[in-house]
Image (cartoon, rainbow, N blue to C red; front, top):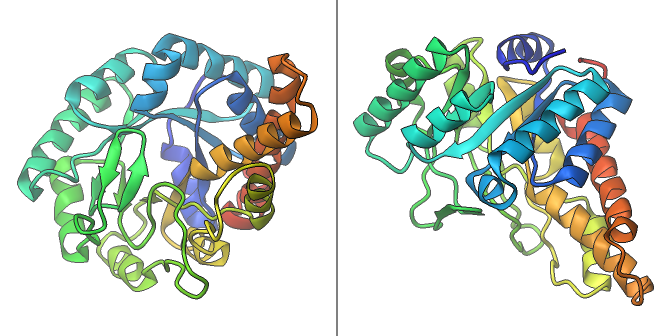
Length: 311
């Protein structure tokens, strides 16, 4: 089975009330952990690559690793560019075998965002690739994406139909209270998803696939392990998983997951090295890290995304 686009994935997800996980990848062990969980639970899958991942691992290495995952699992897998900063980056990924790209023009004025998004859409569609656009800005830090709380903004529901109509995008990332990265919150002050905004967006774009970025919701035991073995992630829990599940049952067809994977991997490596300080074989400490990612992804598929058995 070759790499697929997200078109049929999202159509099925919208109709059946679940979301597809879009997991950020940086190396072989991360890809293996994610795909092992998806194969075990027969779940559709989006593997996405950020600008930082392309700098770190190289575009060709990552695409070949994802192609190997398709061969090994037989799953429908889309390869997606996360937060493409400009037309040239999107073009490079389209030409280089990606089946989906995101153009993030959310930091531009509205009309400029429309113009750059439309340019990417025209090139992508001519090459059989789908495009995700973005309206609104999420606070937080993820690789090259850095937005302060002061500069963040919710998506304006009255703009979404006009934006989609003028650009031709295939899916739309919106800002409704999620945030990039892992943040510390005092008990009772965790961020909440603005489901009222999502409802207004649904009314403007019935049946259209919506995307959530920054949807970290760290499982507490991973936080405990990081703290136990030399970390400092107290209360970094993020959006409650129950809120994300509600969004997945509605118009949200794609939920991005990155920080959760990093924390799970880091916790496993720190635990292994603390218990085996004399070991220096990467295979020894990356194996439990891969297993931790597999377990985290399986948890997300079952309890957040709801896409078990939907491949």
